[in-house]
Length: 536
Image (cartoon, rainbow, N blue to C red; front, side, top):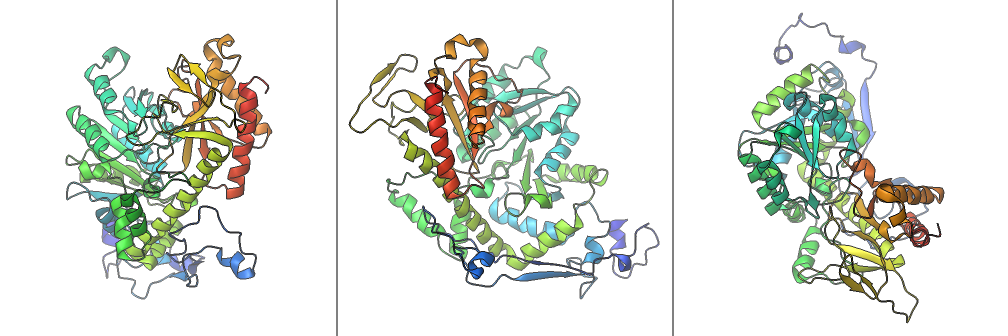
């Protein structure tokens, strides 16, 4: 009925809906930031914040010199018959599950410009955020007793969508780029039906993966997609951190290659040239390789606008979008009218180019926060980095993350300590390895592997040594006012095999300040060194 109720001139006596004349909201207004508020070139060490009233009101380091604009949404638009008009009379009314027509219109333009899907008749559907979207996908695709493939370390909130179906969860082996294609192929080719039904769904976070920070690039995605085609799997691509792709971490003392420097300079430019450079630098989405319509992509405004808006969207084939629309109609219906009206008015005020410029500013803001955290690690530890095309024997390979950087205790000036580690087959002048990690190229997280087998009690604690030592270390850090997320909460079955001597922490750099980053990592180093020597 909603379809016909919106026809101009229609006199509807069909719906049991309240009169908008009695809505207590006459207007909805907000002061918004200019789309270029965030600078494109952030200093590695932040300047001291402004203390003036204007600095407090508008922040410091803004990339914009324009005043903050305001938006006002009236109860009735100047032309109430315009299907793309945003007015409270319709936004706060019962709506179709697809939301106000202006919203999918904007999203289709964005998806085509940024994602470039591999087939023509894809479509989008608003949802109440990526978690809601995945819940609806599981409602559509899963039956009780099905098998779901996930990364070996995965976002625990996603489990709320598939566990009610009494699913069998299989974790897929990972490295620094996420799922390893050869491992996936071997698993499917040798599937044991006695351990569960053959899977039909892969859930993956390809960019800035939560919790590992791994980012899957185009060649790897094409390989995974080809396997999905071969074994008829549906890929659910959850991408909350997609536009927070920051590229490789560069140590402070290192120089960029000419190609990398050119790309960075290009991305600092205002206007269309800079926007295009930003888009071209993003990893290609699974949608780019999808020609069958077997990819369901989940996006959210939680990381680019505000998580409290509970707003996102699904991009997929018309077959899936139609079914997901029916599921929305019988569950959440349309997303919040307050959230949709404010967000689409914000987006229309900025325009597509303005929104992309906003995303570029966010990328710069989170990139520098990542650099703060890793720089802080470099200041308190001796970091050995794996160099491209140059194997560094002092960098350890860690299951699930690969090779990136290994941290050692800083030795007193002029001393040298050489230890032979038979287990790893590596000789280092820097002493025992303490932690390893792969510097993330996207997202909000550093996945820190702690070499707990260096603890004097490791071999006497038995099979649960890693988890027990990680728990002790986590509690000591919390007692000293530093809180990390323990890695075991991200294991799909909550009970990872304990045979590596490596425990994991997820460190989020999204909300900490420069000073907090340095203080927290210094405290971590002091506690860790004492702990691994059995003094904690």
